[in-house]
Image (cartoon, rainbow, N blue to C red):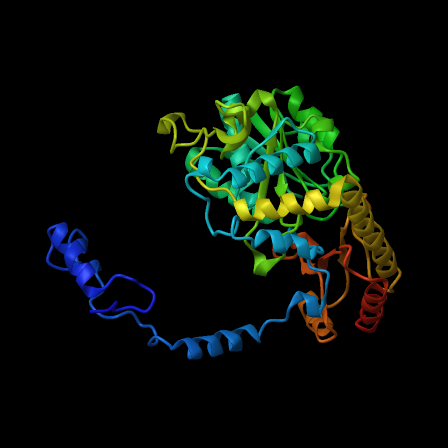
Length: 452
């Protein structure tokens, strides 16, 4: 008897043997605890299985409906960016020693993987100016939520301030994590003229019950916040400061450690990870020595074995799998090892000079095209604050219709903002990376002029 299913190796004889060993007569007996009225008594409403050839043809048909970013000039950012990934990143990533969909076990045996994570952590610390970094989290949204929980635990407080100019997706994850823990989330509005959060606005909410302030810079609108002033306000009332940063921007902007951030985090997709239809992503997370034992996830350290040889070990894991559940700082179990490896390779290739060059190119090109768009009649730039590589544009007409027209010219337009910010109806968020050429930028301006 062979396997009854193409992708399941167990034969019918294997299954019979397993059922016999656990003392049941059939698979249905495994679900006897579920009341009959809740059990499906018919096959799932799914089409029949396809042959491999039929399946490949169907996947190809579905894939052909996509419009790849490489075939277009993309100005879509809002948290995921079209940066250039050097080919050597993918080459190293796919080596058999590293390529896995999950964390290698047992970790201490995988010395190469541990060394990569250790070096990734070291580079994140150098990039952010913080004392320690963990082995990574799922994405920036998860990192924001874990930072808020960490701040509440460290301060014994239950109120979290978050700027409204922080990525709405990150805020949604934060609310999901906070609600069952009884953590109150308070939004701090932005200045409608500058597009940044003002310290005096934060001061209206800061007080002895506030565990932390979460602020993103460059924020969701691309504007650079005065992070030092924002941090000072929350520190004056005993709260912690959580800085959400774009790692590429740190090539030219001050690192969180320089303005007193207690926790620094962000989305690491820009570091050598392609957009991949929106995932997988990479949440980097760093903090100070004072908070190291409250950090979620795990940390890899460097040591020596009994023969004096250099080695790497999982040094800190204050999570529920390894300590008493009530003492755990977090129940997050996995890190994004493969994405962290890509980030480590990317950062090692770039070095400080290369990262600065990428950041400068993003800034120069974004400012060039922003100024050109601002000169088009009926187009406006609603915020006058300093910005990095993203900016908001207000224009007449429907943004979705405009983007459809641009797509027919192989241009992926900016993200409409009305859904997340009703007061910004008619506005779109545009991102410019180092990949955009002068010709592409000028073509965009010409097409927008036609669409006025």
